[in-house]
Image (cartoon, rainbow, N blue to C red; front, side):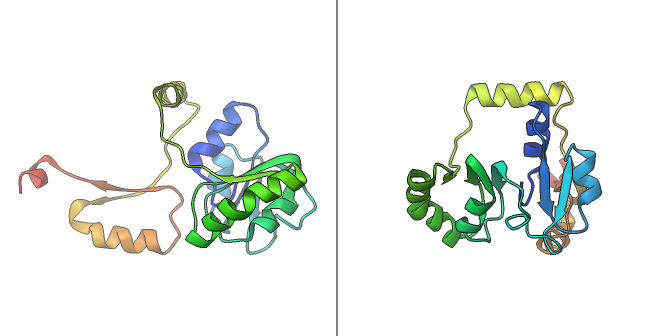
Length: 171
């Protein structure tokens, strides 16, 4: 999982998957703490060239060519882009179906509107402790600018939360 979604790692582990998280050097301990079996620092290792085949690549960053991701897929594997640049999304829309037809490796984007069964399952996972939100820092409403600066640095290892007190709502 590139730009590994913390919930996605936990959900995959709850289904018994072996998970490799790909992220920056500052995040391996956090990724392991939520269940990643293997962690790759993208600055040190190119997961698309390490010779491993992945059954599923969930790409939350999409800043590489889909051809790179195709190379890293196992036969019959899938690459799902869930975030990233407009160029990457366009590439997946235009070239993904052709790659899927010619190689048997599926490449596409996830555009999904949550439905009741999905939300019920997620609620169940949270209630059972299989999915735990990862919060990096909390900021009061008065420090939104600082929270956005911190988030923009790309160092957050979880959610950056803005807290709002009741008296702030009435202003």
